Each structure stands twice: as C-alpha cells, then as structure tokens.
Amino acid sequence: MTTRAALVWIILGTGLVCSTTPAMAQTYYPDYPVCIQITKWGGSYIDCSFTSIAQCKATASGLAAWCFANPYFAHHARSPHR
Image 1 (tube, rainbow, N blue to C red):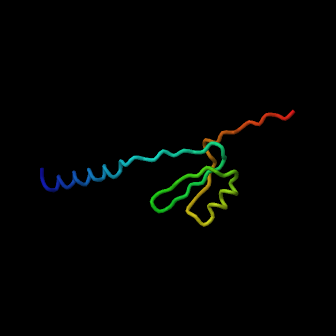
Image 2: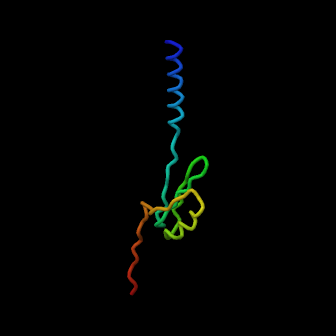
Image 3: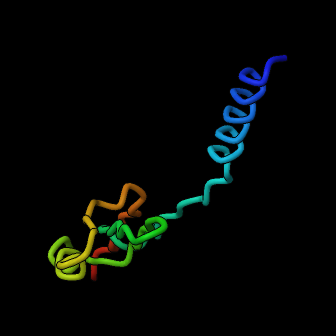
C-alpha cells in the first residue's frame, strides 16, 4: 500500500467515524398544537408547548427559530355538556 493510499483510507475512516455519531431521539409533546425549533451554537432543539402560532412567534422573535404545527398533536374530543 502506498503512502497516498494509506492517507486516503485514514481520511475516509476519520470521516466515517465523525459522521456516524448517535442521533438523539426527538419527541413531540402531543398535548400542544404548535412547536418551535430553536437553533443555537452546537445544535437545535424542539419545544412543543405552545397553544397558538402567535404565542410561538412571540417567543421566536429575535432568535434563530421557527414555528410549525405539531405533527403529533392529539386532538382531544370534548364531551358534550348536558
């Protein structure tokens, strides 16, 4: 194996190790219809604790963040009052 081939394998191996870090599982809280994704130095996180887009946008103001509908929102059916 030549020096150049060894260097290529070292670079490819290092890239493979760096790209296969374990991913964190993302959970969405199903009781609220709106989520925010906030991006900070070193990563981002999702918070699903908003009752409206307006409430979420107020929190997102001035941040690297955006609001979206919670894909796992559990619509609670209300029973009719008698």
